[in-house]
Image (cartoon, each protein chain N blue to C red):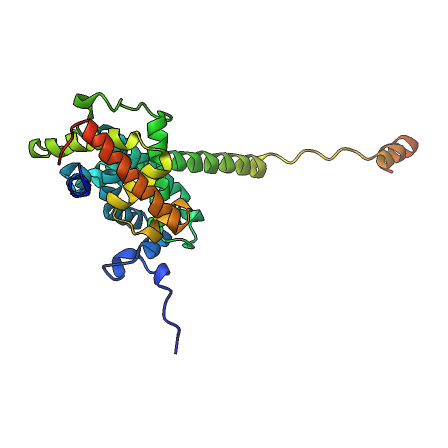
Amino acid sequence: MSDPPDPNSIPLHTRDLHPTDLQLARLAVRDDAAFEALVNRHAAGVHRLAAAMVGPGAADDVVQDVFIAVHRGLKGFRGEAAFSTWLHRITLNACHKALRGKGHPTVPLSDTPGLAAPHDPVHAGEQADLRVRLAQALHSLPADQREAVSLRELSGLDYAEIAEVTGAELGTVKSRINRGRAALRAYLTKMEITP
Amino acid sequence: MNDHDLDAVFAQARALAPADNGAAERFLVGHRQRRAQQRTRRTGWVGALLASAAAVAGLTVLRPTPELPASAAYGAYQSAWGDGW
């Protein structure tokens, strides 16, 4: 009896409809369809995180930086960490880069009218505006608190996942989130921002 | 602002917007163009490389065989014994 075929050697279109991120990442090294499936699966979450960290106007640039980095790094991705962990680390790095204004022009966070994403329908304007103000508020935090709070509150990662992404201890993560949230409450109160 | 208000702000910011849902396609449009350009460039290089290889091979095969130079020994015999030794 022959061994079952290696699932990673089977072309994407002939395999199950819900391959894991790791399977897709391995296939995506040489299969454009697998890479596009990864992008389709994760781009919205990356864009959401970026929009709230650097402002909606710069979020597309972050998405582009992230997936270009992913495409280049797939050969070296061994799957030792979860794909999601790796992707969030890359996203945070891209957000830092955008906030520092390196690599591409960063729209000033105070320049609200320029920050609306071109595809936002009118009814999403309020949310885009809230993300701009949230990005300003998050920008007032130290980088480690900003990362921990954003991963928790915007990406929905649990403490252990955040610890893995940031390389910090679990207790440190909880402390950063608590301090970050307290600072955000104070900032948003001062700016009279309400939900 | 209390914790509940802050949670409400995050919930509002976290809700997926149309701009989030369109991010993949906006990226992929540019990505496909970049990949097509890469492929075109690669094809061009391969074509040029094959053409060069073909030219070198052609020159090697079709080049007329040069006349062999006379050896020193042949020259010595020739001078000592004259033509037709």
